[in-house]
Image (cartoon, rainbow, N blue to C red; front, side):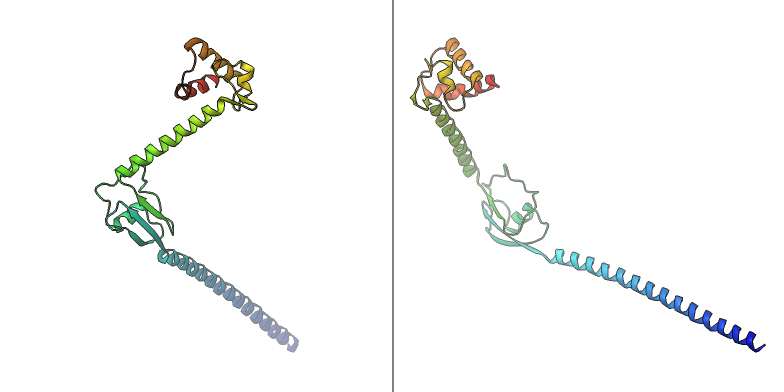
Length: 199
């Protein structure tokens, strides 16, 4: 009987320690899991709070009522910056201005007047025309000197930079059907047609 009591007692002790240890481990595991979850939530909240507190500074100038530097929350749009600057001046041009575009820290938002926009467009057109003029003048210069575009052979035309066999043939065909080029402006006006035909 003594051996049976001792064995039963030992079994009970072993069961108590084993079950008690498992419960503690499970409890520790659950506590750790809860703690990890709360830590992640805290990090997400901190990130959101940081983004909410992040401030961008933008310079709004030109045709607005109150030009200056304005502070905006991250994720703001250009229209909000214009609103802070008192809105658009009555002569402001909104053509080409994407007011829905997000602002970035340090942006300069310049609002042009109608007159400034037209002047800029004319300047861009003049720059394009100047570029075509220079290109057309370059067409008349061969590597070893000048050639006459009205009398040059296909081989002579192909010696010019940017003129291949097809474009040279188109120039000669145009020259034969329309007549000689009399001014550089005529060449400029017909250059796009020559390029289209040469594909």
